Structures are given as structure tokens and as C-alpha cells.
Length: 315
Ligand SMILES: Nc1nc2c(ncn2[C@@H]2O[C@H](COP(=O)(O)OP(=O)(O)OP(=O)(O)O)[C@@H](O)[C@H]2O)c(=O)[nH]1
Ligand SMILES: [Mg+2]
Image 1 (cartoon, rainbow, N blue to C red):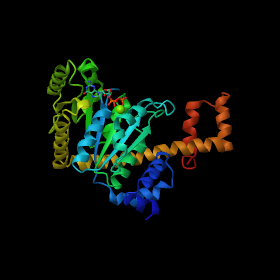
Image 2: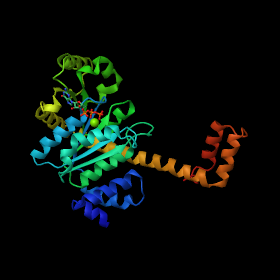
Image 3: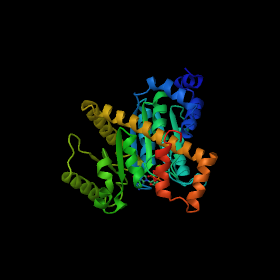
Image 4: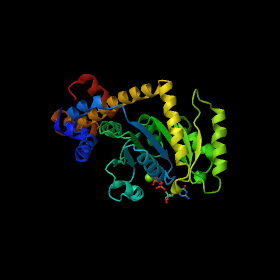
């Protein structure tokens, strides 16, 4: 086994950070490490926390972490950060809210920039969840801001998805129409100290009556995360959902799909990267690119002809 893999398994946080950075860059050096660690994964439980900006996702993550640490669980946190790495707005906010856990060696916190991603969550997050698993974290929390495709991507990472809404999210029906209904395993109505939380919860419950799921109807939990209220109830619903997934064998099914998705995304990402490398360095391709530019070749058909004529030599 590689030295860095051994150190990671032994709880070395520097080794963990180092491999995290490697997989984020899709560095080939991480491949033997990931291979060595695979047999040591499968124990961690992953919880996704998504919802609109400012709904209280980080506060919920912080409070759940507090509860889990009290129970003796170890925790890994991944915050998908859609802001610019230069301004670092939300990142700074997350740091402030979770900073009390920064001193705790049993809590590992990592932000991943999602800016510039074409859609969905970055592939690296799936790999990072497996790394935290191998490093012995029993619970992994993944926070993503719910905007379009990114929100749906959380399903492909988490065993249990929490969709966080707040009374001021406005028309609940509108929010739920945007595809949130299908991804939620548990609805959290946070900021229950504000007016309208009860109506929001009732609206969400009513919506569920229209589209009942087989086996599991996502419960609605009211929280006041800033005060820690409702967090134990939320945790008990997460555990119920976990039991449901185990009993129906859906957990194993979800995890298998997740592995396949990571594999497919890794191939797609690498193909694109290698193709761009070839385009920049191969004189034949550069000539073709210039013909397309000068209108001597037509882009649509030239692309397909290229792929059909030399599909294997492109990568
Ligand atoms: N009134 C009230 N405020 C809350 C509650 N929970 C969190 N907040 C506050 O809401 C603000 C946003 O909380 P965050 O936890 O940063 O929200 P977030 O969803 O992680 O935000 P982004 O990551 O920026 O999308 C903070 O000022 C929190 O203190 C709550 O239950 N009630
Ligand atoms: Mg946050």
C-alpha cells in the first residue's frame, strides 16, 4: 500500500488533505491511493444539506456536528462553495459558523469550489466523500447551495438528503415544483422562530399528499438552528431514514449507482481534459481548428467527422 494511504488510514490529517487536493485536480498520482483505500470504505453515512442561500444550512451542519461529537461520532464536512475563490463570501461565512469545530481533530472541514462547473456537483466531491470514509469519519455532511442542477446533484452524493426551507422562501409550491420534491428525504423548515413556519410546513405536507412515495414519505421537521432547537428531532428522523434504506436494500443500490456515476464522470472529465491538451499541442488538430475558424470546414460536421475518423487516437 502507498505510504500516503497508510498515513491516511492511521488518521494523519495532512495525508487526508493532500489526497483531497490531488483528487480535486484529478491528479493521476491519487489513483493507486484511491485503489488502496477502497477496501476501507463503506462505513460512513453521508448526509446532504441543500436549500436556498442563507436558509441556515451551515448552522444546521454546525449543530448536527455538535450533537454527533457529543455522541462520540467523528465527522467530515464538505461545503460546496459556489462563490469566487477570490472574494470567498460564503466560504468565510461557513468558516465563522463552524470555527469552533476547527479545533476538534475529529472534525474535518473542507470547501470545494463549484464555480465554473457546467452543472451538477463536481465529481471530486464523490471521491472526497470516499476519502473521508476511509479516514474513519462515521458521518459525512455535504452542504450545497440549492441552485438548479447543483441541487439535484446532492442526490448522487448523499444517503439522506435534507432540503432546508425557510418561511420566507415564499410560495412553497413554487419551491417544490423546481424539482426539490423528488430529492428530499427529509424537509427541514428552519427559522421556525419566524412567522409563517407553520404554514410552510403545512404546505409541504399537503404537497406530499399529492405525490406520495413508495415506502418513505419525507417527514417535515421544524428547526431553530441558531438556537439548536429541533436538531435532536432532525437527527432521529435521519436515523429512521437510514434504517428504512437498510431494510429496503435501497442504501446498497444508491451506493452502487454513486460509484458508477463517479466512474462515468471521471472518464468524461479526463476525456475532455486530454482532448483539450491534444488540441493545444497537435499540429494536425490545430490545422483543422484553423480551417473551422476560416470557414473552410463547418463546425458541426467537422466535429463528428473527426470523432468517427480517429476516435481512439484522441485520448
Ligand atoms: N432567525 C433565525 N436565524 C437563523 C436560524 N438558523 C440560522 N439563522 C441565521 O441565518 C443566517 C444564515 O445562516 P447560514 O447557516 O449561514 O445559512 P446557509 O444556508 O449556510 O447560507 P449560505 O451557505 O450562504 O447559502 C445566519 O445569520 C444564521 O445565524 C434560525 O433558526 N432562525
Ligand atoms: Mg452555508
